[in-house]
Image (cartoon, rainbow, N blue to C red; front, side, top):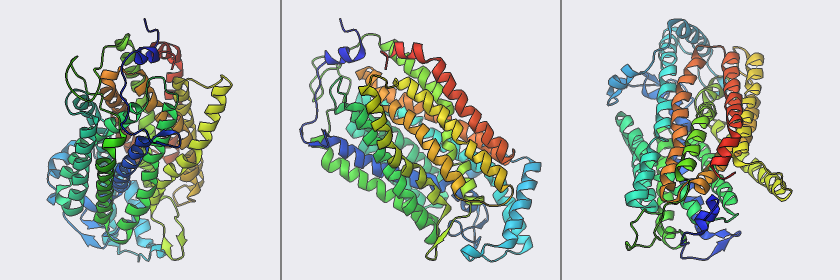
Length: 518
């Protein structure tokens, strides 16, 4: 009888990809998935980096920034956006005291203008109106951001189930990518259908996200030691897309208008689909589609494994503990982006004003920088028999995430009510990224190693469920940014991150035992 997860997997038939071609010691299919995921993340993060600023400064105000970060030189009607009146009634209002404080600060900045961006001082009555609208929209936009980025990670549970039972991973990935591309093109072409565009992105991501991550694991036989390294490479593909997109989409939004940022994101998704369509069939492994024994098909029959319920339960507990991590981590695109836009002096290089949305590219840049270093450290520790377990690494990641916000506490103290150096959010992001590398790719790999094969896509969806709850929570935590002092707000983030790490550490032994000491 098999005594651990890997031994149970070894007893089952495994069918690898048709192509035996290797690149850098890994199946060629890994790099097909790497590139497909890179373009999908280009699409997602391009839109995410613009989302909150677009809501606050354009879509839901009457005086608008035609170009991201520039003058309020356009007008529009939020009431023209289909469904806005209903959705607005479900979202929170800013309290009067906080609104007054925000308006007074914003009016002062608008009356001064911004010579570095060639923005002239604004007339007092118009400055008052712009400040009133944008400040009232801040908490609403934070909630919309949280619900959107949360729902994007809820639908993978459904998409994973559909792939396991009916569609298979390959068809699910293609369907999801097509829906996401369509959603981006709706945002580009019809701003009054904004919520329809978001809905298409949410549903499409549900089919795409869990199934492309599962396909990475399918490339390797049970017990293959290359799997953790494969997910690190795959994770770098995610972040290559995230790095490039904000340079492209943010620049287009600043110089050509918001909608062109969404157009670029949609084109990126189409490129990812084309790569999957042309190169996927020969390089990817068969789907782990659940079948009855003796049913015809390309995938081998998947059988029930021992201790399935125990392992799945342990993963659910770990996902629940990760919720706080994602709630704090997702402040990058929410309150940290607001800080980058309103509290940071961005340099002008050769006459080009760097957009504040470029802030979103620092996190993936640090992924490239730190991932190979950590991989070498972990490899050396493994050879010496001292490598931490996956669960321990995740606990360390949460603690590092929390401690990174000490930098922002210091920045808030130094800057006060003015603007300050870009180094404050950048250094915080560098530290935060190390915490992310200890948790996110490790978690992806852990799910494929521990989940029963016949439920692996659904359990990957469960992993993303922690991001759903975390992102929803991040939106409501972000509302406190408008109510509290920046110092107290960043202290809260620090405390939450550290507490989540200590909670995972406290459950380390029982979780590892349930998951076969991974």
